[in-house]
Length: 295
Image 1 (cartoon, rainbow, N blue to C red):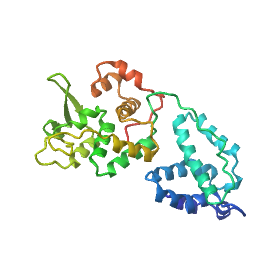
Image 2: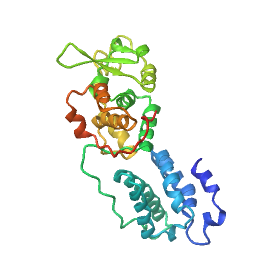
Image 3: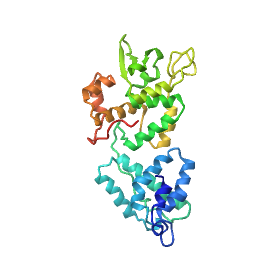
Image 4: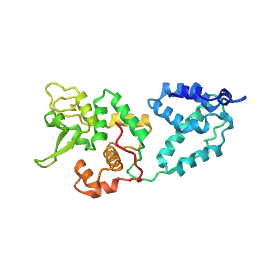
């Protein structure tokens, strides 16, 4: 169901209010949604946030009837549900964007969100990604034809190290066995990277370049692609995930596998980790189950 359809399901009086400012649902469907569709790559994610977390609370209210106290009560509800601070902040930013646009368009004199500050997020190298944002990130990467996007999606789906994916060779890819072999630096041994059906399909979609042994060749076909950071920087900025590094993707994979029931020893073998302190130091598991990694 789209926001416009969701708005149509509201009673007319509730949607339009009696007079003055429009209802939040009317403003969202008539003004805010067209605005973000034209200006943001992540508009679909913001639309879902509005539909699932903002309209149920504020949709029937007129914009000028929503107070700062209402917004604080709404945020407190997420805190009682044990939503991560980063998740609460992302939802708040969508609501704040709606009110800021209403002020910019002259619909409101002042936004009820203007005095509210974001929740504090612990300074940790483990950013939180809920199912909604993780699914949307994979969707954005899978839609792109860029080789950098395919490499990033594979990092999320395999838990491999960046270098293991960027320097992967066709001769070491065995799709029928769901396997990619990665050389261990400084040794003559190989690490097995097991492939999910989703990861296997990504490899199948990659066109093989003539005269290049690399799955991700660089501009010089004799060398693998050197870096994917600039592309990743653009993607994470568009999605509002500026605190998420490429290295973090490996641990997003680890966290979701643990939450879906994988044992720590199995995960250790899967990710090729020899020192468990690396994994324990970087994982921050809340103990809530999310199910398998979204496809």
